[in-house]
Amino acid sequence: MTKATEVISPTSADEAASLFGDGSGVTVIAGGTIVVPDITYGRVAPGKALLLGGAGLDTLDATGSTVTVGAGLPVQRLSELAEDAEALAECALNVADYEVRRQGTVGGNVCAGAADDAPRGDLQGPLLALDATARSAGAGGERSEPLEEFLAHRADRLLLDLTFEKPAASAFASLDYPHTHAYTVLAVTGVRAADGTVRLAATGLAGHGARLRAAEAAAGDPKAAGAAAVGDVTLGDDALASAWYRERALPVLVRRVLAKLGEAA
Amino acid sequence: MNLTVNGIAHEIESAPLTTLLDVLREELGVTSPKAGCEQGGCGSCTVLVDGEPQRACLTAVASVEGADVTTVEGIGTAASLAAVQQAFTHHYAAQCGFCTSGMMLAAEAYVQRGGTDDRGAIQEALAGHVCRCTGYVKIIDAVAALARGDEFDITVTAPSAGMTNLGGVQ
Image 1 (cartoon, chains in turn green, red):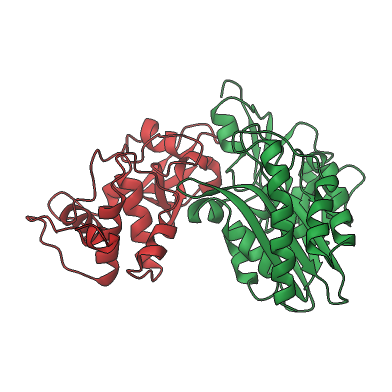
Image 2: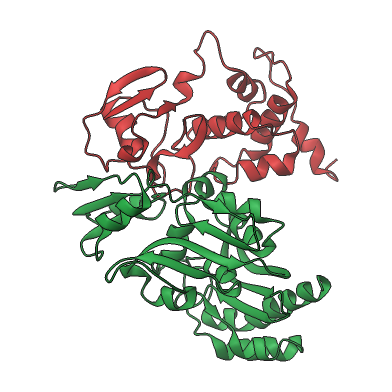
């Protein structure tokens, strides 16, 4: 670092929200797994850094019919939701490795910006399929909105927590690139809500994760749903796979997820 | 800010967003954590922070203020090796040695949290650690032996249990 950086460590969520303000000029560091290498390699030079580790955002409440996940919860701890939201737990355990999952946070994963080399934001898929509500702070104060809307302007907000209804069933399927651990090229999550509604979402797309609404409308016919899913998304090329390959893999993942949801009926 | 490294308290002078890896290596001269990829992908900088394995390269030092950091220098000495160091020696689990300190600390934490000698579980626990000598079979042998509570004679090298587990190779 060549210039002095103001580093602030809030000790409560309210203090974090207040210090974040409208977010301008603030670099948020939670687990650090994305931002710290960005600083090391000179891609980010924070003027003001907000260290969230002591802000008390690492909460998990699954005692009632809903689940609330604090933005500062380590990704590894989502494994505790294996009974309440199986697909979310399975997706979380598919992220990186044990140490990085212990350090990286749910909020950091959900809010990660796009990278050139590989997709980010694995948890967006299950959380979109779970129809999670995002509570965040930023310009205009605190607000809650569907995660789908939040993702569009996540760079300007400080995510506080995510809440969703426990589903009747959920399923996750991913296309992985084998390395020492698996990098997720493309993934699909399916959720059957308590009222029977089926929701589908994908990650590994050209932008952030997205709901697969045309596929959802055809969920009763997995083959048709798989074909429809291609029209729901924009696919891209990166170091892991081409858009051409992803287009052929997406229908397969949709069919696998719907088959798993069918088995869980 | 303060940091305890291998039982010794230090007053840290580096800027707050300096990585824990740079503080250990450059400011304190503790060089067992290696600077491999410096983006969290290789595992060679892994240290124990309050007993849990953590990537020193992904950690801004200000975020671990007051923590207790342990590196391999702190778990044993040349005259009195820790069990994990004995296991790696007896099973010939180090080749060039670059990944070894991270591997040993991840292995130590794995056993401390109740890990067994199940080879799949060990692979999962060490998944973030790359050995470019590709010496994984003997590393897993060593961690399995440590998890079983074996005693080690470091004057001899163990035959590889892993090779017999590959099956089909006669």
